[in-house]
Image (tube, rainbow, N blue to C red; front, side, top):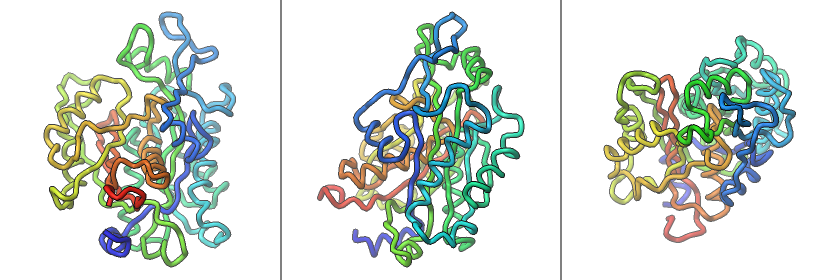
Length: 358
């Protein structure tokens, strides 16, 4: 399908991405490191778990481990936001009018008590954007992309920033993960390595991107958020209903069997409940996939990115298209929050390097 037809079929696109991860200070470096399977998991310099062993975490390569709270989250978010805005170049007249949807961690021990109230003015002053926070954890970055997708179609603004920022590296947060048996350790192999990072996408209409001479990095085919009633840390048994619903909704517009989901970027992080949930969801939705088991789990490399996960998955998928190593043109991104939200985004990449991707 040529780009003119894709522009018509999918009116919303991503024209810029930004990333800050333990593997890189920008999106290209982070994507290259994940592709090379470089691991960022390290022992924290002074935090120890309940067994007295140093905690396994992933940390920003530049920020001091002593920096915390709102200051740390701002230091992660601002560079990624600036990188996502960079395609606008000198067209700075947009900056005062660009709204931003930003995903944040859910309420948890160690989370700054007035996070939204304190982080919002910091970001708005630094970047001259209008911020709306979505404090919904893992799913919130994709929920931010969903809000931008809807707003662009409704014509509320020409551009939106959509992304998320998170850091587990607070003493109370790490101790809480350890208590809940979610922290990866020698005693708990089904835990995850807590990390930190930020990811952002510049979202616009395909017609606006063409008007301003911006490159379409990916078309946003569809987005959906569903609710999983059987959540972690409850007495219920998860069978993937919420995730299956989100995947079914984003794949409903595919013309099967010609059009299928080519690969998956997801926030499986080593926790058994996430892997089991995805297995059940795939059993319900497998006809929409080329191979439902073809999934990429970047947490293996950069740790659990929390609320930043979804937009960072978009950056990885886009990099695969730009560099010509995409496994297909329709990557699925999904993430699930402890509060029950299950979000999915289906992209279409403008990859033309390999004939089988057409």
